[in-house]
Image (cartoon, rainbow, N blue to C red; front, top):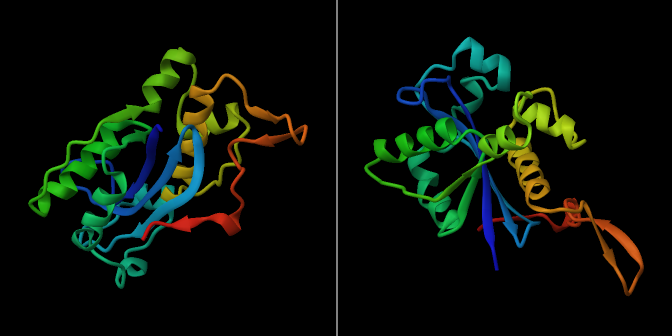
Length: 193
């Protein structure tokens, strides 16, 4: 059984040393299928959200006032990831900022990662390979405003496209095709506990 966790964050800015995570989301993938299990949380921080970051994710500091701080959710995130590989689009940013969040609370993380940005650059050299452009390339619905939750789902789908040679699976006994990326409907979504 191959298990992966796609992870995305939204932050107060683009400085991995000083900016903070204000939204995080993890989506479970087992054997190249999205299981429907996910974790999502907004995170309270004292760091001011930059104007540039706000334009991207539209999250205001006031909205985060009653949300948990990173320390409160840190153990849960580590437990969810476990020994699975993390799927991240641009490991140099999201993983570094995640490591710094753990460092601030006196914890260390050392997860194995797969960088979908590096994969995209190899598969599509010279093309735009942001998450937004990959969603367009693979015909995945993308919201205009960034959300760690939506981006972690889209990232999981992109990872599966990179790993699979076919987009549909034919079920012989029923002779019908199902989309491997959306076999789990909303009603089957399970929040990690």
